[in-house]
Image 1 (cartoon, helix red, strand yellow):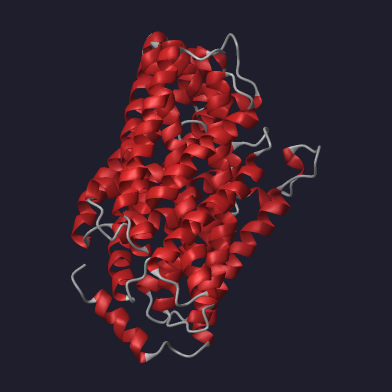
Image 2 (cartoon, rainbow, N blue to C red; image 1 turned 180 degrees about the vertical axis):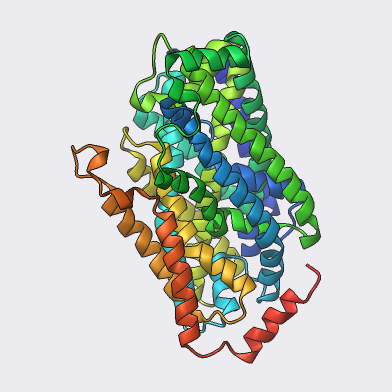
Length: 501
């Protein structure tokens, strides 16, 4: 498909605005705290929408509609699990984490928080958590780059390789320049764009099909299972879908938004904005995929093409100018997550490896530049992983999501709510959670060339479930086996839990 001039113009304007924000943020970034946490000065709206936008990524406009298109409304269980998990994260984790990270020596990264929370002078917690971040975020970043490449490929007829490098180049540029402020403000704008696109596209698509009732009837007449949320699902499949919600408690790129909000008193307002945005956006994505089943019935989308349903709707239903805005919304979804992942990963290298181990006397300016070059390094590794044209966005996202949820989630929860947790307990939980996810994923993958059913049945359960449970148990058991935390640690815990946060 050739590039429509209005669509191209809209795209260019959007990209120029994003780069402009990076340049402005560059001038406001003076030290590492500014670069990785924005000086803890995010307003509720920016914190909420940037958390939501960085959370959802390209899978919201590509992966989720594709999953609904492929299997019908039984995919709604993922949306339910995510909504519940996100609410619980805002309700119970956000305030405590905002307060605790400030009290614990003004921690600016998740590994920084773990080290300060447990007074870990050995730095092993910092190093292991930084390794987990780098490993899973590289995979996660690759998923976003795959989504961006598919967008450019399907929209402009580019080769996959060119599309991959162009999308990555833009994201690297403004993240390199502006850090957390650039990422948060671009995510805010991108969140609004995604929200509007996910309202407009399914409504227009269903109007073309004769309305909601007509759409449901058309889809049902093709295959009744498409309108049944229980169709073809066993108990393991439902648990796996709902378990996506567990991942929220361990996602560093979401947790740092809680840490960066200007005051814990802003959390309720941010939660209201964030949850409203999320629920409406999820339903928009689900209805987009559902409408695509009927709309493309005469020319079905095959295999990986299913993830391009939103792109195709943008092209066939709207004026080229509007199509450009809608396609920019997809790029916004992708960019908003990849930039956050690159930033957290770069902070892990700068703060948790370079400063903590290699050069303890590094200046703030030096650390900012180390973080910037780390963005480029991590992006290049992710581009290598994303170079496989047959990669699926949802598959890569689910793996990284499970990795963070299982390795960090139980540690975050218990560090905020259980005084008795120890350094060794946290370390055991982190390692067991990560290892379980990797091992379970390998065991659930059938041999090359075999059918999916060739995988052993119990291992069809989403790896975050066993990973989260085993990590939780490991933390409790190892903590109880060791000495109680020091009086200093317990006093700090009491001060956080006894304060108005």
